[in-house]
Amino acid sequence: MRDSRRKARTEALCAAALALFLEHGIEAVTIDQITRRAGVAKGSFYRSFEDKSRLVEALFEPVAQGAREAFSSAASGLSEARSPEGLAAVYRALAARLGGLVLAEPGVVRLYLQECRAPAVGARAPVGVLAREFQGSAVALTEAAQRHGLLRLVDPRVSAAAVIGAVEHLLVRFLQGEDVGPPEEVPGALIALVLDGLRAGGPTA
Image (tube, rainbow, N blue to C red):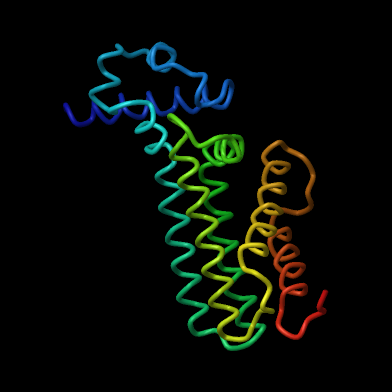
């Protein structure tokens, strides 16, 4: 019974925090505002979280863990990919898994997109850590594909940043309800554009 109450309190705090963060930004929101929105005593906050930064980490953990698993699976797939078709299949599977996270946690993804380019200070620091992790994972995948001769030797930091930027731009528009094309076709179109430009043997600058 006590565990169920603690779980319910934690979920209420997270839901209240997410709504407030989306409205005002992470740094502007106070713990008092979160507890009032959640309908719990301020002392209850500290029984669930050490501080606001820990709450932010908890909000992002399902998406962060899902993304880690998706990138790990893609890295395993790339270790066996030996053809352009195999490379494209790995990236399609990665896009499908990450797309599933977007559909499962649209509010958290919106918050990430809202905060990931702001200074990674204070309670916003966990977002910066996650952004660097995503960038590092994308760079590592590019380097693996280059080692197999499947992608041109463009600086992976540049290509990864370009791809992440394009994905984030499309996600912002999609989550705002804009028409970016049939959702099931967008990942494939983006992958085709990226791989056509970066595939080994492709055009050079």
